[in-house]
Length: 238
Ligand code: ATP
Picture 1 (tube, rainbow, N blue to C red):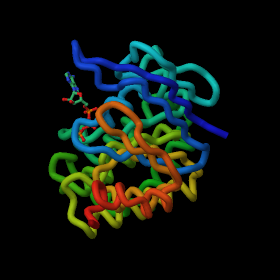
Picture 2 (picture 1 turned 60 degrees about the vertical axis):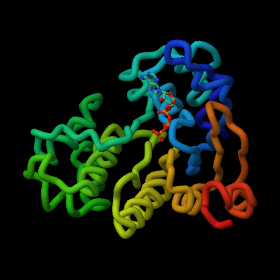
Picture 3 (picture 1 turned 180 degrees about the vertical axis):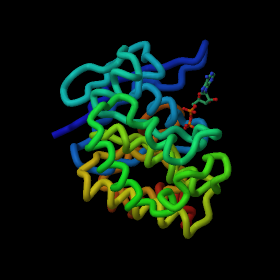
């Protein structure tokens, strides 16, 4: 069953049309990736799903209900959490308080404590540094913190915008392993937007390729990995 269905969305910034009738869907429980060059419109898609942008045309349905036009907070409450590009931590709050900010829509304190422990289990470094101010963390630790914070709202669908950007290869590998664990252990559906096509295709089951505001390809990731154009333009193999 599709947990998310995006149908024919169009978005413009002033006169510039950036999403030119984009449609795609995400199977419940899967990891789906959208690949595309700089400026293709990947971030715009995530912002549209999470309610930060209202599309001029088209629809976004989550669990069969239309969500386009709803406030971002209502969309979080329905079970979608967005980790934006750029690791936006609350710099002057501790790691612990940053994580608790992710639980702002909840009042089930015991379950919040359990989820906090689960996040410390995924990211032990956050537990070690829980009283440290977020701005003092390294880039990789900040990326872990924003993913952890997003999990504190107990999302059914997690939107990840370029989690690997600017991180060292070993750290990228670690973050992707944790993303896979979150998907498998929590049954969290994940939409991953990435420029690191190799990593994204290795963790996702299905991929879409976005070029200049249009989806130009969509297939199982093994098929995309074997496709000559994908190898040439996204995997740098030819
Ligand atoms: P990147 O990988 O560089 O983040 P992207 O695929 O996520 O790129 P978007 O950020 O969605 O792409 O941007 C798509 C296009 O829309 C780009 O040409 C960008 O310059 C433009 N754009 C994005 N946000 C705005 C804005 N607020 N006002 C005007 N143009 C914008």
